[in-house]
Image (cartoon, rainbow, N blue to C red):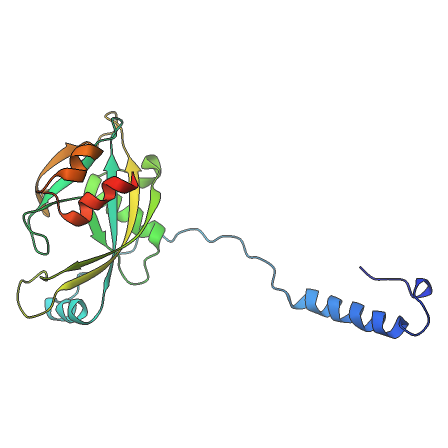
Amino acid sequence: MIIPEHTTPHGITSIIRQRNTLASTMCCLVRKPTPREEPPARMKHPLLPQKIFASIVKHAPLVAIDLVVQNEHGEVLLGLRRHAPARGFWLVPRGRMFKNERIESAVARITSDELGIDARLSQPCFLGIFEHLYEENFMCVGDFGTHYLVLAHRITITSAQAFMLPVRQHAGYRWLTTQELACANDVHPYSRDYASHL
């Protein structure tokens, strides 16, 4: 607020004027907030050559999205993993993020790829960040494992929603209650851990 000079005691008028000038200058320097940008249209992400991807897995963590899918009864969807890492275990659906892909876009893409539904209709809810380390890698060769930083999201679907479950990554699917999930030995511990977050 600018204080009129005639209301100030003699001797501090110049100080007040300097303070007001500084405040006005600072207001001009503050950047006005920009409107929130809309997520970009879905981009095509060609698969990396196997040799390059193996080098990334060996030297850096991967960022993934886990989908903790629940139906109207509170049961959790699990798929029987076909490939390493974690082959032979039951896990929640998952997908890897790509470079320059925003989290919102990745959740939408992976929900579509893994469930065949629109993420906007399933109201994804962020559960948290989890760290998953596997001793093996996707090729099952070499002396390196796989390190995932996982952004887990809970998704709710109903029996009225038509969804399609792919078989490329999973040999089968089943639904478990949260109590069953917490103690199922054939469910990978990383997916079993989600029972305590639901």
